[in-house]
Image (cartoon, rainbow, N blue to C red; front, side):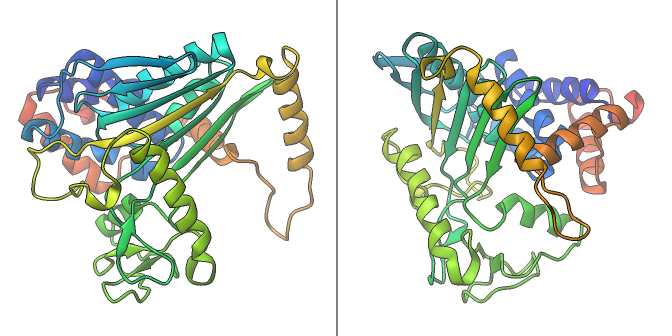
Length: 349
């Protein structure tokens, strides 16, 4: 499916459900960006959930987001319970604007909601020539190291930076072994999970998405203390620094209450490379680093790749061949088209 058609469809559906133009544009931009790069767990499949949250009143479709400039390089964005995607793009724009003047810009976001793939916002900074970082908390999906029940969210870390002559360096990772949406995605298509990434209610690992109740922290059974520690760092930056409640106390993303705002927190950081080294030096140096990295010997049948390489390869392929929709998404999008009187995607293909 062509990305332009998908973008239009998503925006039309959201606006038909009550979102304003800015919100619909931000959500469609983030979902299509994620699916272009192959991050399907945080891409097109999330539209039905966002529509449900919007219709239920959990998400404010026409928020009045307010930015409070605290110090020269810091600020707080009150997202007014709007879509996290709009809050994310706005916050990173404020962060890069401050970084243009001071070299650094940091924005905490409160009263927000799920924002999809964290990499979208770090990437927005890199596309403007800045180093960008994005963090977000979520309701508990990940058990603590040697714990039995979920406590942290998947609490992602995203980092992006400009590279001379190339697409940006992009790292987007959960601090869990896998994202929770991957469990839902695999469950929808009847696929087993890898081993040592998820657990049942008794804390024992399982590969069956239908019986999984929590994820293991990054590092798995023996070294999960590393992922648990990183998850805590993200929690502190996202919720404590923004004055929001921590993820363990958030309403569940997929719970029955779609009327009460969740109060999700985010944190964004932008660095202006020219504030540290001579103009252009950083992007050239990063290009040289990546050249050396990719030239390193690989194991038999493998290839050494830098963060972002798989995403850009997938993006090039999907921009040419189209973004695939699995059976579950095809059915969901057909129902959305019928419900809102929108031209079905099959008619646009």
